[in-house]
Image 1: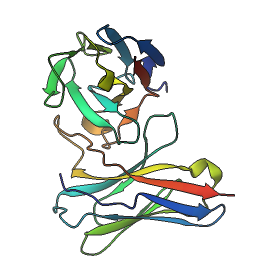
Image 2 (image 1 turned 90 degrees about the horizontal axis):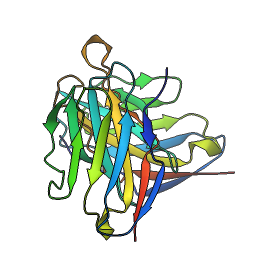
Image 3 (image 1 turned 30 degrees about the vertical axis):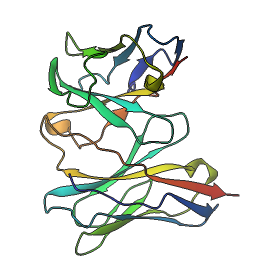
Image 4 (image 1 turned 30 degrees about the horizontal axis):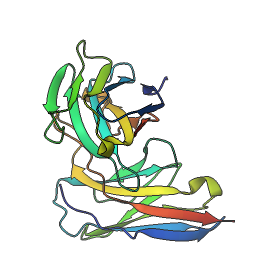
Length: 113
Length: 116
């Protein structure tokens, strides 16, 4: 699976959009970009994933560049409850018995009141 | 829908003692994972099961760690004997297979182990 690079930490004001970048310059054509987050003392929680098109769900939007070498997770209106570590993960598809998630160290997003 | 259940939530033991963690995945999820998360790091995969078979245990320290999923449902992770460096949160996750599979892993809240 391709390696990802994320900033160690970021701040965001409550109510503003939080834009979390991820670099995955070695991504292969069949690899998806997944985002998870981990709130303190909880297990990781799935947010969103995509292959090459931008995706949006009730939690966030995922913008993937045309060359697929980087992506941005957008939380449109950050709240204090969005304070968490955000992990960007690249992996092949989501089928198959050998499919697994490899976590890096993620980005600690601190939403400030 | 009930989530992934883990127990105990917290455990404190002396080094060289043994400990066991239990996980009950979401009903019908054939794939089960155990991750180890040391403070300040991302989760590290220890072992992956597909039903009751091991798919990947390449990162499991087999001299002291063992895991089983005998009936393809719940699973147990054991550490014997424990070392100081085993202090971590042990996370269990499960994933649907077949047409229900979206690639999403569902995690439990974890079991926090402190080895003194």
